[in-house]
Length: 559
Ligand SMILES: [Zn+2]
Figure 1 (cartoon, rainbow, N blue to C red):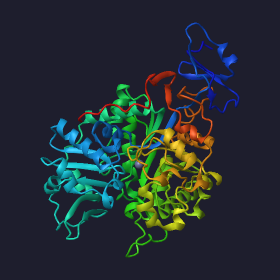
Figure 2: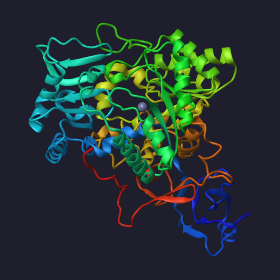
Figure 3: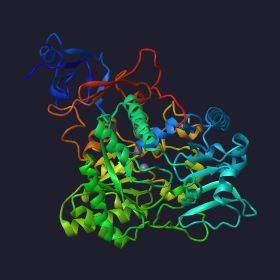
Figure 4: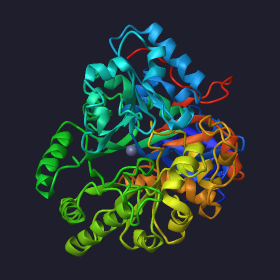
């Protein structure tokens, strides 16, 4: 065996190899030994680089199991409202961007409804900030588009315009558009915006990679390869960066299943996946959206929403019978399905579809359901039974104002009790993966781990401004530190099908790891440590500067 290039000693090491190990050796990008400081130091030669962790935690690199990286990078490069959580904050960012960019449209993203009186912004507010040209801002969850009067005028949206299918034009008392377009209605204006050029998408993806590496993320699963609402198709950018060698993180992704497509579209998807493989990006997964979100009653619930008339339960995007057939076909073709399931009925329909596939095809691919806002207690045990991964977005499991004021009144008390049932799923033996859904919410895994273990908002999260977000939400659903870290590393690697190569600090696996600034002593520690260094295949891919107080966000400029 050749001598190691890199040694790390004195670590609080998260390795399944040996529980008392404090050190590891890396040779040619691969972990070649795990042991005590003494054992590992004995392997050193003159050229070996040596990192002394001084008691700090060393974990496998984080693996974001559900993310929209290119959209996140574009948000960082564009007019990004995520940096603030107030009206004055938004106004400052928008004014400054409009002053320094002479683009035909002012385009941005990242607003939260609870910043505005009444829960939504208005076109008049945006007219004041951008009076001279069309301006359009997508909400942080990508379900709402805030437009100024000029943008509405160009789209021809008036009080006479009918709501499109699967979309809603928010209106005032006289029926006049107020400036917010929900879901598919957003496309009425977003289709007029000059599209991103291929080089913008490439730059967005590489900006995302730089940002994610600074947060300790060495692998991710792109949850949507295709175009959806205001998200551009990032597949060409992945192929380009893989081909030129600039995409260094371990990346997998799910091919988008068009919501209106029936089971007869399976061959078409297989062709697309084949074409991507020939171009260099191997895709093993398909994304199926089975419902929407609770906040606008598009999540599919078993029992009706509370306090909504007439009786509303939310639509299934795909009929359960078609969903079962599509799932069985894709499973038989060796593909894993990444379902979007928010409401308890959507979750049940996805589980039923997998059960159908298992009956028809026997044991096969591991499938997964992402989000899981509301799961009926009767379905919790089926995740383990059917080998379906619960793909959690842990940062969402807290009492934000938006959740308390908008979401819980709609789902009612009894369902709110089963909000994001992480603990119940874990106790029932479900396989767990984790991701951020960035740019919907922050991609910082330390924030996600904090909330997974405490069910409160991280101290530094400026989007949590109400006192309730600091008290535990459904505390019995907390996860242990070990379970949460496992889900955000190995669990996601297993769900993405790359656990043989990465995801844990084990001899023979890639040396993808993160060195933190201190140890993980308890669940509050996630709030107190930052990423000191990110190592990808044995090479330092990010190092925190001595003076940095928090992870750097790449600078903003026009796109
Ligand atoms: Zn998503």
